[in-house]
Amino acid sequence: MSNVPVSIELRHVARHYGHVAAVNDVSLSVGRGEFLTLLGPSGCGKTTTLRLIAGFETPSSGEVLIEGRAVQHLPAYKRPVNTVFQNYALFPHMTVHDNVAFGLRMKRVPSDERRRRVSEALSMVRLEGMERRKPAQLSGGQQQRVALARALANRPSVLLLDEPLGALDLKLRRAMQIELRTLNREVGITFIYVTHDQEEALAMSDRIAVMSQGSVLQIGRAEEIYERPTSRFVADFIGETNLIAGRVVSVADGVAGVHLHGGQVMQAQAGGAGREAEVTVAVRPERIRFAGPGETTEGLEGIIAEAVYLGAAIQYVVQLPDGSSVTVRRPAGDEAPRAAGAAVRLTWDPRAATVLTS
Amino acid sequence: MMQAPLSPADRLGRGAVAAAGVLVYLFLYLPLVILVLFSFDTSTINGWPIAGWTLSWYQKIGLDDALLAALRNSLTVGLEAVSIAVVLGTLAALAIHRYRFPGREVFLFMATLPIVLPGVVTGIAMLLFFHFFNIDLSLTTVLIGHATFCIVVVLNNVLARLVRVPKELAEAAGDLGANALQTFWHVTLPSIRTAVLSGALLAFTLSFDEVVVTFFLTGRDNTLPMEIWGRLRIGFTPELNAIASLVIAVSVVLVIASQAALREQA
Image (cartoon, rainbow over all chains, first blue to last red; front, side, top):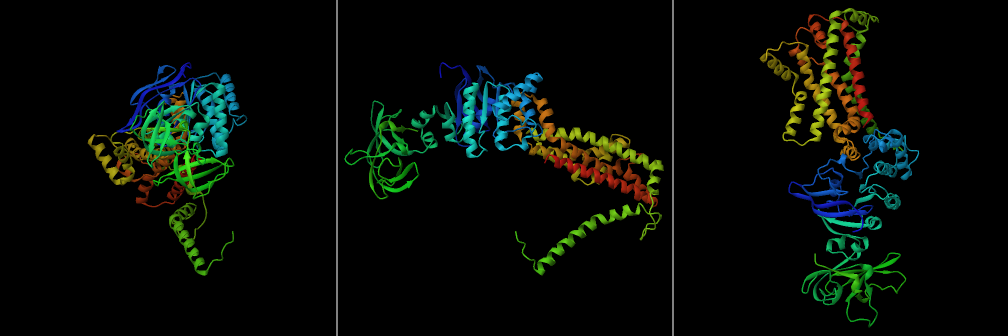
């Protein structure tokens, strides 16, 4: 990110309501044109973070910088950002045209340029010909597009989107995800996108910031977040994962040997873990495989408790001797399916597992 | 869907409910209907059956200067009270909705008190107040009395609407570059316009019919209900039926208009 100019920067931003910290010491920077997603469960502070950037909230402490300028004390109407609200917040008494033209009217853009930019914004979201309609006469998807056009007409340097696709059905949501991503690449506006949907985040973002309890736990590209979670929360929240407790018995070349509860020693990316640390090993179900006969004496021995055919894959639940269970997902058709009750030995590439200390 | 045949007991039950409904409406509206019918009666002594039909009582109103003056007073007081109420009531509703200030609940309770208190109490209290400050009773004191409950009507109406307007609308306006005044003018006011209008119409109706508070606060000039009441004490004339019928007609129109205004943006 270092060679891209910074569009938005948060420095130790906090927002307290009484004794409750909705946002707690968040620092992050977003490059110009980047698509950053704030991802987390409800109540994690992602929407408050967005509102702090938009100017609907004032930080209790810390700085918000837009294009290098500290704006934390500027009201919303003086900030060069625009928001797409979760419930769209279209003005019900105005036509589609007047809604989209609102920002330009407030900025006293001359009427002929205003008209041009309104039709430009409406064509960007493919809503030509709807100018005279009222919001109530539009479908949810169309309203969503009007909200987007209303924000885009102002040509903001940053577009803030608060779960903009939450109210749409799955098919429409998928289509809009692609459209938003295309829009971000084409117009070069910085997108900050709030969602609790991890699939959406993985599919759309340049980078993802995973938030929990008001803090950013991890920020990185989708693969980094998915493959190299740095905490139990992130590993668990993004996709499915097996979390197996153990103790580090060796560390060499960034690979830790972890003595898992259940007896065996398995290898995983050490991260920052040192010897003797009590840790959790995170490993994705699709990265675990069944060891062939005589292939290895390591690995977790277990009994298949359940085998579920999912179409593209078969999902197994493997019972370990200590009573815990591990989920394994194997591509269907690659190997002979295992039946429930079969004894198996589970193994994985050391690069596929990560040691988590928190 | 097939309608199941009704048992005799069901039919009886439905009949009883319908009859009760009719009785309630008769109870409410029969006196009004009779009053309106008598206003067209040629006889000066109202009795059944109606002796003959005439519009003369309505013509007589037009020649009755005292009655016309009272009507004018009522209209003036009503319009002025509503004007005060629209400004103060709307502003108070906006303040209560927007800000969380100490004593907000108390303020809201106190603001609605004039409509809960019996008119007698309000009337006496204000009468004592005006006496204490040596203010002579006149239409101005009546106006102040009416304004107290008119403000509450507008305030409640507007506040009920504001609660239903999503707060994101104002935020969206700010987000698009509108300052506080522009946000109010372009977004908040259009959202509450019909609620203000319906509150104003309702307040006017209340002021136009008000007797109790007016009784304590009126000076030499009478409002229409006071004039009617004063005349009733001396002796009944059928002209009063006619004026009362007109008041009913105006009130019904205003209340219907008020409801229509509310429904438009529901």
